[in-house]
Image (cartoon, rainbow, N blue to C red; front, side, top):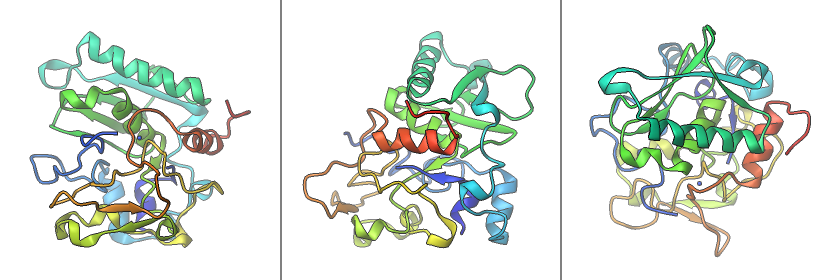
Length: 257
């Protein structure tokens, strides 16, 4: 249940600096849920209340889905939060990429209360999940401006979460708890099927939102081992076909691109 305070729906991104804040928890970052998702005070409250009827699967409670399939956004300002023109171009390229594959649009804010703020701020790459009044993508380091990383964080903003916590994940991956610290085990907890939906789409090893094999490893050994031989996980290059289908299905796109 607790997952769906944070996200309305799950979707399922080749390198070791792939997962936003993997291996960096407690390193001057704000308190994050599942490694790279920033919670609002309201979301934290509901997590503590564990109200099952409030936080069901995406199609039962849509308050975190952006209306009109459009995310209004602004850039942070000032010496701390401000982005350079080159950095803004990289963000827009990631937005255009998502727009080319889905019906979702990113548009400059024109007075909307609920909107996205894209800023540098604190170290690390992280984001809110879904629509909030001041949703935020934090791109606080040079590595955050890689195309796949920006796409990953924007998918969180659209309301999607990591794939390795799916209720059926044990059919597809083995989690090696012995290779991670106790304090970093929370991003690997499996979610109950009663509170979770994959929108009737399969588990996706190839998702831009899937954790890597060595996510949060303390000894260089794998923390996630796919049951299917030869598959790659943790890519941060492109949306998978199932990523695209999930976004289009969740936002009720008239036709999948």
